[in-house]
Image (cartoon, rainbow, N blue to C red):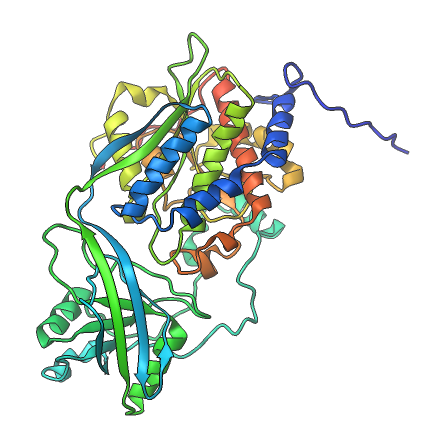
Length: 508
């Protein structure tokens, strides 16, 4: 029989365990875990960012307020060199100030809908009959839309998720094994279901036609059911953008009802009062930066970076996209600062804006500091960054990390995840993953990494939706993620050498 081995709390200062390629200071990992789980601030920070501040569309007042709040919070925790840093210009800012829509005939019913971003308001309360418009045959509506509210035909069968399949899920061991072993898996391997085929007509042509015909407003379908609306851009943010009509994206159960009534020849009347505002004074946008300075005489000018995008969409408070990523990375540096570590390298957190419009904040920062991804003309500071760690796939706990085809870091990350087996973080994969700010670093030759996360309800319920609220965050998952990112940042900052790099990408 095996003898029981007593659990000993390891010394934070001296006790380390050696693996094949790297050393993990288990004493420090223990301290990080204790701070991150026993004295966590992550849910309070999330409350302040989401419930108190609200939506954070880039260019909006909400985003400006969030930037000021983040600067104050990082300073409060003792970080240094905390500031907002300009990354470029953006175009017109935009935000919602009022949204009301209801059906009044054949009976009264309040409806669930969200204005498309960068579309105008109605100029007060409007009431009008609804007309169903099939966009593949616009010409037949000529002369029939003046003063009407247009309902764009969905072209979909009325198939709804009746709750037979859970919205939320966690990655199984089979999922993780497949992620780790198959480098060719893409999002295309997980189709969300085919829609009925309809001939393509450009939105520019549709918008121009409806404007010319004198329609008052537009209602369109966006993916989602059970009261969820996934929202999107509705118009250009450019200063010289062509005018468009006020447009609402409506929950499927409500727009399908309108479509069925109108298809049956029933009279449908609607009323709405939409107020939006545009910020025209200043298009300059910023990222939030803070540091824990390095202390090693030879290594303090080298940098370990972490971050997440703080901007969100406007239908809710942007909790899982990407309030959770923001507060987890903030909590990671709070933990390290609370432990009074003295990193060899400088640790720098950056909270991005403009991610939702194309990684604008991170790409602007990278171009300013590190080099041009199009020409691959690099700046001296590019050589000084050991790694950038990003979190932006919802509020699920970390299950591992993508190496972005950087084979040399694979065994290092395996060792760094060893102390977190009990927290279900075990998987390292050489697969690439895309869609967020680590790409801005990877494409300029800096090791940039995104973590594997449990999906929870991210794709099914919260991503860019009116349900992306505080209630959708799991405190245990966020504490776990904060602890793991803090440890990765610490290990990178204390390593004798910088993390190995892939060959430089070719210029585009």
